[in-house]
Length: 334
Image 1 (cartoon, rainbow, N blue to C red):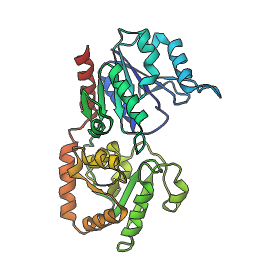
Image 2 (image 1 turned 60 degrees about the vertical axis):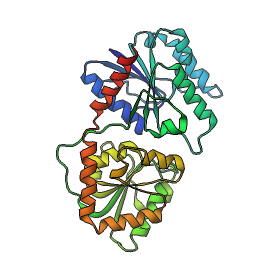
Image 3 (image 1 turned 90 degrees about the vertical axis):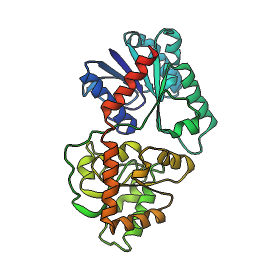
Image 4 (image 1 turned 180 degrees about the vertical axis):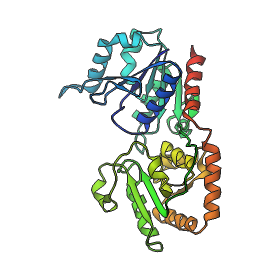
């Protein structure tokens, strides 16, 4: 099949949706399907990991983004016509005029995460319209049903590539943070947690993989920026300070304890409604998280029990399984 994905961001940009689209595309290509991604991300590369990339040019100054995208999509209508599957990641509004032009063309959507808290009525309305006009949907996280009132065909949590052998951490008193350095990932609260832990464990190490607007506030930790293979860094540390699905799955896959913070009700549900919730440590403040970190630093048996149970769950959450879900949706609706 010829599969067309629409995603706001893609290679060379990095992030959860970007990785999701890349990994499922790689599996689909192994299954002999052809994959094309239309994206706003700019770059010189027109192919990545066997995926054809078509980039929407940057809009002219003063020109409406929606009109710019709609005009471009209509101008390039042959890309849609030649595709067997059109699957959109969040940005269904890109496809609306083409939906009218190709009434017989099946289109699907995956809803990833949430925008901001509190969620606006506009955000809920946009998702409901996308749900209604598409031919089927996948949601990443059960919390989406509660907060956006979505009726999903399938619920997933992302995938992971489980390594064949798991190494012991090089630094026992250590943690790794992975994510954007902004208010959405709790980067500053994780840093505060480290400061509290260091009062009783002064040698506690903390590494950061990520970049963002809070970089200057975290410069004392010498952030390492974004890295392609985070497993190389996860295995060096004993704990993972992460609160996004893909990073949580990747940490569980290398048997690292996961500590996750939330600071609003939707993020709380994002974590607590997930099937892996019982395999990670969840807290609402840096103070509470620091107490739990210190407890597990002194209880290696408890820590091993958590990581073993988490690994037993996550080892079945492969990208191949995620692709099976996509294929089941497309088959169900055709």
